[in-house]
Length: 551
Image (spheres, rainbow, N blue to C red):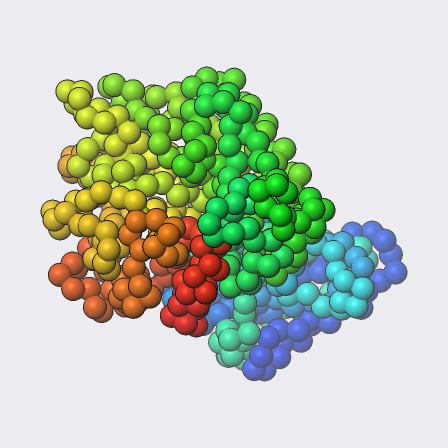
């Protein structure tokens, strides 16, 4: 069965030509038949060479010993600076639906169509996994570029049996070279600059959409959507396009232990300028059309959530799903504070938690992820007490008596690490926290942000136990949480101090007395702030500085 698929690919219709120094263009004469046809050439790599695929930075190759079927597979050597994207451009018909599929093996492997839909998997567990995504061409579209790529720093991935099916079979057999040629290699190298990461605008309840491309930088902010304060109300349509991720604050439970989450928009009496539900939803869709992500943030200072029972867990999944579907959102932000998460006495292993409020939350989020698929955006905004404090103290401790909330977010982060889009710990409203240098660090300077972020990038022993290490997160999963101004929270720092912290963490310069154990991490995802409203109140100082820094 696997080999026959490759033979069919090689026998598929029409001739192809490789451009000498540019992107590959493959012209097919579309038949009038409505039967499904194969539109990719060499999708099984059985020619023994790449052509007509082109790969960025000469990162692609054809290898043996790793095939899903037949003898050959595509290997993409993703590095710290290149996702190893390989593309093929084909002729397509307007207003036509096609299905792209492939078998992939590796960590963070993507499959998609430039400017349209995509899908991805965080890990295939060492075995091949099938990815599939459908897309419909526009009324004037006559070509499409399909791609597969890995993720920065994740190593080599493999792809095989890549197929693009659609109505109308090609009409004659392609002649595929039997061995690699210099012109094909030159074409692959020359087309590297033309390769692009995909981003789509639809929500999980619509067509596929992928996270921000790895290695890119994101600005995350909370929008006061359910209440008003001194920052003033801001309509969704008025949120500047500088914000890449917009977290709607807040979804809250009917009661602490019910698990039933509601999201009530700010009432007219409190927010005189509030838009209608229809306008709010339309503005969300408009943001998504520009590649922005809009998430429901649950919790906050007043939204205590304790999923103490499986009934509460199920109510959480059901109610959160309803909110996501109603507004067409891209995912969920977990902003559990206060007493939402607390470890039971004797629950001392963050890798194998037993406390119901922890295990039920993990289970609930996994259910949501399973429902909406790989494109479901998952972010978390815990306080330092629940994360970095775990370096010294975890739960009530081996003898009891400690605050059982210490480090209580660690088992949640660990269990969902492969599903996690972004972790942006709140580096504000925090007490002194010991860093990996054994020194206490305090809010108000670059040093605090450097030390707290380095702990996430380097990993650390939980409760000082070097045999029980909290593993580092990928830099692309980490953003730094900061208040937008002095009114927003304790721990505000001026733009120059923000830049000093970024210089140290991403460039290895200006670190002062603290030397990051993780080294410089240019792919650190970015910054989060509380909040978009407070930044607007402050003349957009925070967002302007972010874009001035990253360009």
